[in-house]
Amino acid sequence: MKRNAGRKPGSDSGFVGAVKLLLPVLLPACLALFLLADTFGPSHAQAASADGQYANGQYEGVASCAGSTCHGRAEGNGEIVRQDEIASWQEPSSSTGAHSRAFAVLGSPRGRAIAANLGLGAATSAPACLGCHSTYVPAANRGARFQASDGVGCETCHGPAAGWIASHYARPATHKSNVANGLVPLEQPQVRAGLCLDCHFGSSDTGQFVTHSMMAAGHPRIAFELDLFSSLQQHHDVDADYVARKGKTDSVRLWAVGQAEAVRRSTDLFAQPKFGIQGVFPEYYFYDCHSCHRPIEDGPQAKRTFETNPGRPIPFGMAPYNDENIIMLSAVSRALVPERGASFDNASKDFHRAMGQGRAEASAAAQRLRGEAAALSDALSRRSYTGNDAFTVVAAIADRTTSPRFTDYTASAQAVMAVDTLLNAMVREGRITVGAAAGIRANINRAYAAVRSPDAYSPSQFRNALGAATSAIGALR
Image (cartoon, rainbow, N blue to C red; front, side, top):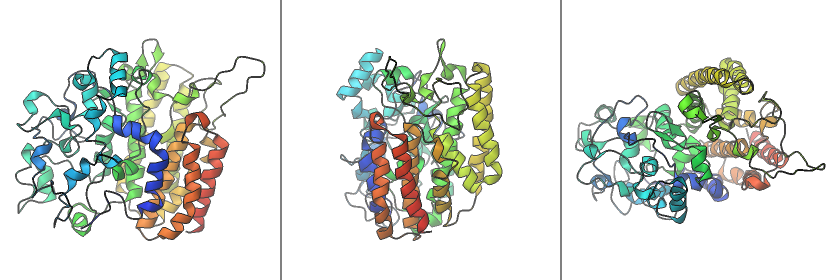
């Protein structure tokens, strides 16, 4: 029943390297999360699951879970669950405790500066910040022990506890009965992805959306990868008891469905005028920041600092849509759902092409791409997975079809996270030994180093490093 501080088995061969080398990229998003809620609309009270089944329940607060016979032990040695989940959630020095620190981030110098730039007043009381930096629900839905200052608490992810807290640990309670009483079934990849994306991308249902104005005020760029982020926040063991109650977790499925749901969410929001347009301009949040935020030279010797991307049939000089998840989903569809791969790629190219035609055309193309992503999400959720799938996807990420599309920083950062995630899955499943994975680590580290800083990003260096890593992984198949 023991686990390694929330990390996956075999994590030293991949996970630690990912965290250490990508901290400047990931932790601003993990710690600062997202600053927004358009109105007081109770984000987490409205829907704690993909279908809103658990709407408007009562939130009892973190303290209601913190008893020493529940989840509040100092050491994880419980018979069914570890029982040190609160201590893990509160861990002060690693990403594991990021959710508990989310509210405190608002009072940091950066948090105060962002709120001041946006004219929000105190960030710690601004609905635009509390929507994702706390379990933000109206007073009517708060129990006696609830505190917004707890940050992103247990019930943000697990759902309002009033309906299940008194029965979820007692016989004859089952996971199915707990879900019926309001516990969110996070073991289902689509449910987990939908919930995480509310803050780790944006949502129209809950009033959470990071605008370009917010980023201009100092908010970090948003990045999302479901399997890696799940690892950062894992407070439980996937042991025999867990598998018996909830089924076996498969990292390839989790990663792939996360990519599909990210594309689905992105295109869904973009297609809506209230999100996709800011005045007479498009909402630049959706676009690749670094395609514009780069050195500009005005002179006869000026050197072009971008490469033409074969996956984006857009007019020369146009800012590209941030397609990091689209590229990953294209690779996984060709690898695991080939019958839908061509259809998705065609919809993707049509979407990029429509950017040069007009808002109406782009919105319609976004809706078509959203439909393709949703179909892939369903197919990837239903699919049975084998030990060779991770190898197949890794090969697809770096093959001759996908590799030329790594022309920009964001997609490259997403790609190295993907390869690292899939390498960890191979170690856990016994397909690759820890020693063999450690031998590949130098190439993975080179790929991470290539995306450590947007200013120093070199597409050719990244592609070489990623290619070396994926070739080494493929040789072990």
